[in-house]
Length: 115
Length: 114
Image (cartoon, rainbow over all chains, first blue to last red; front, top):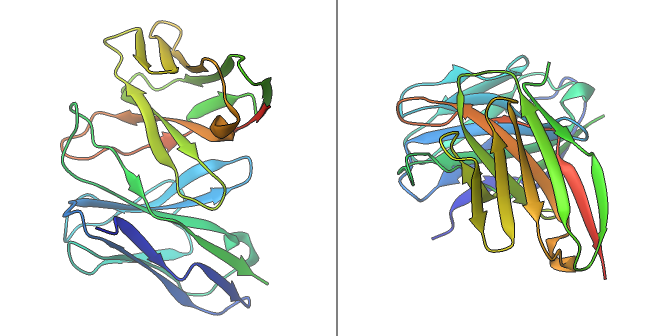
């Protein structure tokens, strides 16, 4: 049971290049999320998928697209990378409620640098 | 504009001392308040959480105090240990049908000196 896995762990891109960050969970969770973490800003929600087949914008969606490929996988795409997208990206998932609330389980993160 | 304000940004505490981290929010629709702990190079992990129908929740050395009227909540770490050194994030979520949409604070880096 790996939980939430993310690939790659590290990536360096040049401005204008594109890439896709991959995320998969093996907990049979319905909901998945993409966050970015920047110093002094905490974690900010980029996009989320409340259930398979749906996606919605979070706080900072500009410059990103997502695909909920199936129940397990949720990918984040940068079409034309910019230096402002240098960040650590976390994927999370949530499923069965515990105590009436939906704990989010986070992956190990992808550290992206755009030069 | 950050929906959850967290302070302090960093905190140094001696081993055995009490660590206190504070958060404040404005949105009265928030009804779930978790705290996450993050070690370097790892993803955040849920530490403890509270709903606004109680004023305090304790799990071992960790306690959340919640003041609904002031729209503030805080994390207290009693008998702080060097192993508690990590970054702590508060968060808040409005009630939704089948998932939580979290708004995170900016984080507090805790350093517990031996």
